[in-house]
Length: 162
Image 1 (tube, rainbow, N blue to C red):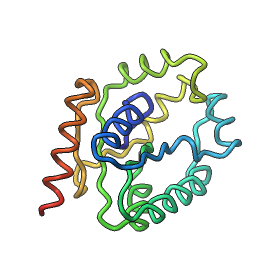
Image 2 (cartoon, rainbow, N blue to C red):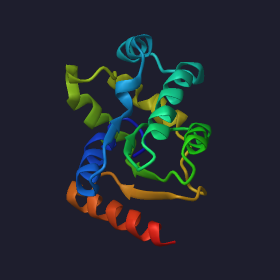
Image 3 (cartoon, rainbow, N blue to C red):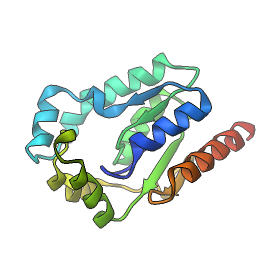
Image 4 (cartoon, helix red, strand yellow):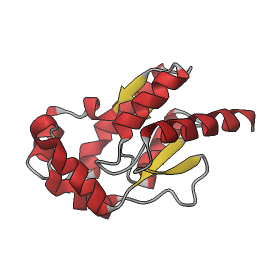
């Protein structure tokens, strides 16, 4: 599951993991303390900040060869390519959401999450949509969760046959 903050990666990831009987790995759990601190203060992460994080996520993919659902922003193509290197055949579900909806969702989190709402704009500035990439399903992040889960599960099973 990939996309900007507030698009619903965690919720959809959990729903798909439960439906498919797969473990779920929450990418946010692998950010180091320094990165969490930066984000909580509204400072965007750099590629260098994300390097170790991507390395840890790649290790998770390698450790779960039988499959898992990984939630992470994967905002740049280079990040996605790096994860694909760790897991050939890796597929992405891109949760599309408008900036104002993402902002509202992140703001509604309040203090429950370390990510500062002021960073939503930087997420959209960094986002390189996976338009021409193979193995990507684009979904409407505002659709009902049960509908999204069915859509993703159907896609995963149809992709297995090809």
